[in-house]
Image (cartoon, rainbow, N blue to C red; front, side, top):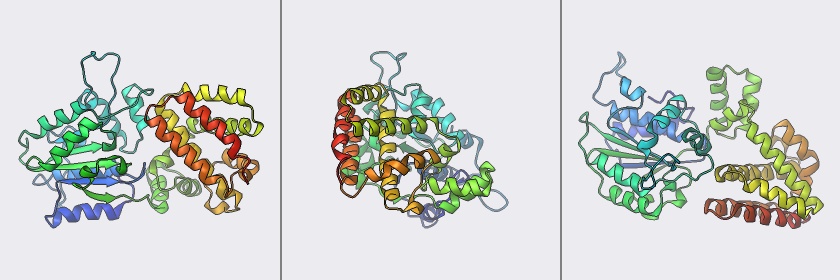
Length: 376
């Protein structure tokens, strides 16, 4: 059931122990950074729960039914952020069922993916995906029905922190008075954005970064990568299987982000305000999800250059191009400015997430970098 999970043996054992000891809470929240396997764990655990009482192998292990293999089991419900497509009517409120085919296709291919992959799958990369109140209404209707197979009903909620206020309030009521034989499995990356009352009604399990050896082993056994390459990629992946896959595919977006990062730093150093304004417009023309991905990349490079500046190469995880740039640039990231720069970028991520004007956010960031780069 957990065949797609990379590592995370400790979490798997903890989940199975809950079943074995008959101490299964009605709501579990798997928390951790992107790419560590939270969704893979949730899907594997849901399949295990829905296979209880079914066919077993000669070793006594539950056999995954064809419905579960296709993620079409009638008692397995998925909730995830959605967008409104131009083809939808003005009165239509998007819900997960509108995109369930695309969702199943993506999860079956690999339960390791990021929001930008999901946005591309839905066909709306330039929008912000949320979970609406209409979604909670639909889920309440589904879970009010009896189990089709006479066992558990399982609700997997991917990124519950993207629920809007109305949806969060309705979900809270559902968690306070859960339907019979219903298990909620939340997959969360930013739990602090959830209502405290929701967090208090779930059992939280922190999913740590995947061990480097587990990623290396999976790259060799599942991807046929040679040992040397697998070792290098597993170190750079920093505990994320998703990052490891991106590194293998020579992610063109990261190449673009490096070019934009280099351009910003050079223009800021030159105090070229006119060209910085043009750079800000380029960033503003990107979709918000891509803007946030660039800012996350920005944060990573700041950290790597800071470590490189202090000759901590063994703690640096950069591509060759990134390291070539760091040889001359790293000295500008020091003890005086590393935290202010990180705070500046973190604030920009928050502002973009709150639908602030992108051109203003990035122009402000660019202007402040002029001052921060000269601090020593």
